[in-house]
Image 1 (tube, rainbow, N blue to C red):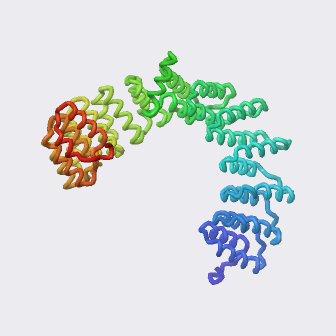
Image 2: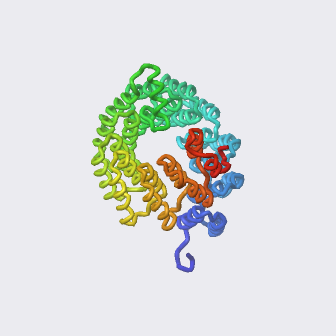
Image 3: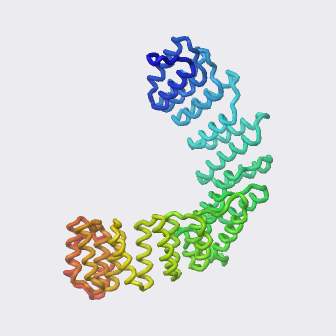
Length: 477
């Protein structure tokens, strides 16, 4: 800079120090600070704060604390921003015992903590798994008459969220009730944490009670609030069956009714509308519950929203399940125009067409993808081979398997097992020994479903001992 004729002042040197700190060149930043002092320029908080942060980022916490102490010797008394930076660094570097020391130092200097300080400390304790310590710190702060309600809401919310993440639902509810007793109005973040925790504990009725309480307190639920609830009430395949079973035993109506009610409440909110996640959850939930007509209504409602591949795959699967084949193909054309197609969507279309007994269209669809030069995943080929053998089209299945060997994608364990099971079910047993040999040569093994099928056919007298021996030992023996 001197060669270029640029005059160096505190402002310019601060920018240089900050740049060195952000690019992890702490040594150069300190060298610039030394030059700055030597040239008679007085460092300020804009000089020291980036350096302090850089010490912590490089895990030099002891050096950072010493540097904080040395700031006074250089004529710059640390302010609340510097202390906030130090608190964040201590928690990031897991130097929790030093937090109390720094708080005492801050008090001795007459530097009052602000909202950021309090939030950083509470958040740090919570993230460090010290929620009880965070609560004790909150109690100390509450003794301060200057503690304003807005800050209290943030601190309570941070602790309640931490309790919920640790599955301490009862403790979280106690704090929420305490807020109400003290006249501290929770925010939507607080309520969302408690609702989510109730859902994780399968306490859906209580989650809905919290939602009703939000309306009473005039807290406007967000899209996230409704999505949390609907994800529990109309969940995906992994939880839907158990939820339906639970309420059937209780002689209650399906929880899908509650999901509809929530959806309608959400639709009438001024500040937001149901989003893509909302519709995807409901469409999937309706399909799993066997209510295809209601799922189709949601698909129609979501027309104005641009979907993503997952949304369109769920919707296509639902349309095929409902027997709306032409409507599904129209949606696929739309997906193609938007260039959102992927191997999962191709597999859904192929499966849908075959299940609808439109096997010629499924085959033509697959061939059209190859003609377009679309690089298909092995799952798509496996899907086609499965259906070809299911329809006893051994010749085409063998051609396709050969094509995979020649042009890719390379066959995987599923490819061979699908062929073996397909040949056995379609009475092409003579093809199986050669397939087993190829499979083992490629380093793959029979899957448990394949072994079960072979053993069942052996027990029924449909396969001989020599056939069973050709499979050899397996990890399932």
